[in-house]
Amino acid sequence: MRISLFSLLFLALWIIGCGLTQDQSQKRDEYLYRAQGYYDSQKYLNALQQLELALEIDAESKPALIYKGWSLYNLKKYDEAEAAFQIAYALDDTDPLLNSGLGSVYYRKALLCSEQIAKIVPRLAHFEPSASKPNSAMPTQAELERRLEQEEQQKKQWLEKSLKHYKKYLEISQDNANIYKMIAIVQRTRGLEFYPNALEFIIFYLTQLDKTYEKLEKSRKATLEKQSAPDLQQKEKERLDAEMQSWKQQIAKNRQDYQEAQTWAADWLYELAGGQLRQSQEATDPQVKAKYQKQAQDYCQKAIQRLEILIKSDPESGHHYRNLAKVAI
Image 1 (cartoon, rainbow, N blue to C red):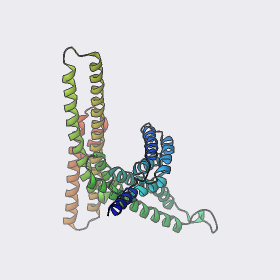
Image 2 (image 1 turned 90 degrees about the horizontal axis):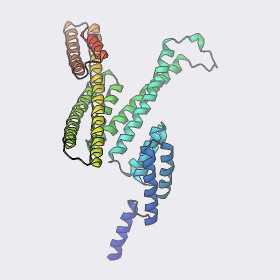
Image 3 (image 1 turned 180 degrees about the vertical axis):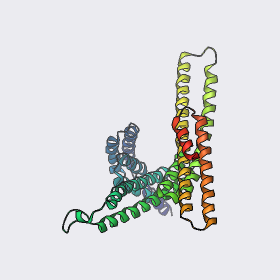
């Protein structure tokens, strides 16, 4: 019985990757530590060298695979990044950072499809049959149309995969507001019919930013109160000065992100209004036409509310006034 239990324990340890010797584990962790330092310094090639050494020791090291995926992602090697992430995903699909990595890779792949689509569309619009002759290197109109269809279909698939992994991240953890932003961006990239979904997530992202801002302000005020204490030692004063500088930088970044997201929300609402107006022009039924016009007015009003928030928080920014005038027209 003891032998059986020991065998099961040994098997369990081997399955979860604990079959390494102490020296091997220590060496692997040293490589991972160096890789993290290089990664944080944005020296991704150096990070990859250390990660490959770690993976030679432990091919199923999830941290090494995830860092490898992100390093390759930052080097714009998206196919290789996907491969590294997928190996880690097969080992454990519940890691938020891993799902974020796959979501990011698939979104970038969708953008590459968008770039190809942007090249094909004008060629089709100005296609001259005489320019494409038999046995020539120039593609025919049918070939261009086929490429366009393939790129559009591939883009759709990449975006759906991206959403799947970003949403899985949220099922596991809700600690990263940027995931809501990324879901909003992916939904927006899918097309006008998905803008309402994009707005839902960007509004939640704005709410999270406001909550973070309140916490940062509370921390800043607490540090300010400490700085006002009499007879501060020089070392403590320097520490508090650095702490205050950090709070100010984080607050500035938070408000910058807030301005950006509010601008997106206003722009998307304005584009939705334009879509409703186009549908109203195409409608022949008076009731349907009136319905689209009402929806367009509602979207315009919501866009104006967003722009007024932006102007209140940043009154010296001229482009918010220009956007407000555009929407009001």
